[in-house]
Image 1: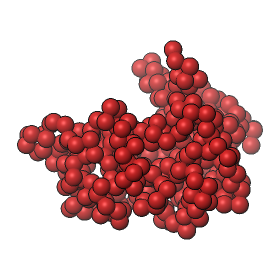
Image 2: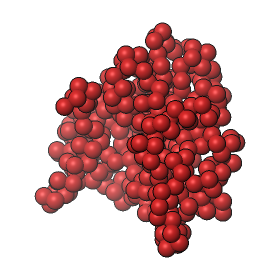
Image 3: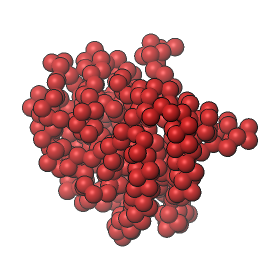
Length: 369
């Protein structure tokens, strides 16, 4: 085993998924609020368009950069040029490509904390030191007043709307933080994969900024997690470096899916799809937040479909064993997050009502709060 892999543990999110699947096979009644995947199926119009393009012969390699028609649609949406867009095999591949291209071995990688667990993995794979930008005292937003940048920093990972907290930074807030990193010549990797899933505060974007790499995709916003269509927006010089990795890593995303998404964007149907999902997510957020805020310290989520309540270290294991509700331990998202847990409300209201009732029963019977 290579040393860089020996220092990486299996994802706690995946572990919880396996625990739930095993429990269900054993006939146990478990409700999972641990996986960050919309419970909606991919919309039928996307499936039909994909099938149409499969039959039309879109079953071969595309350019490593992706189909031009999809890149043009993305570029138009984000106010950039199409040669500043590269299509990838999901947003995860794009994040790994960016990490391998720009994180120097032995340098420091800055990660907002709590933050998505994969960022920590990418830094370790690149044999980088990790410095956490802790956001607990600022409603999970990176505060310009508390940014400390080690002199050997190479990149910073930002993610808004945020996984695991649901926090959102506005355009003004995000640009203010970006300028601080840019002045210090720290490359900003901005993960904006939830940018269309927001409620009352519109998220900012760093698309088009000279010293930023924007990562995005259609897994969450079009309920296409299994299709693996992501994209990167960055200036051409940065894309060229990422292309060196992408051409031997992802090669290209599925042609038929790229073509179908391009047509959905051109027709504007993606906006209708997202609007319906967000309406349902808002109802779910309001329900769960309204019930659980009586027991936990929770920052109300403004985007994505997660909340990050504070409980105690071991709460996730206890509520799973005693009440059959699967959550994700906070320790997956940062060194100071052991007392927290991530709850995903990307499941049906029926499941959420049952899960919340069980959590309430556990809390009230335990006498711990």
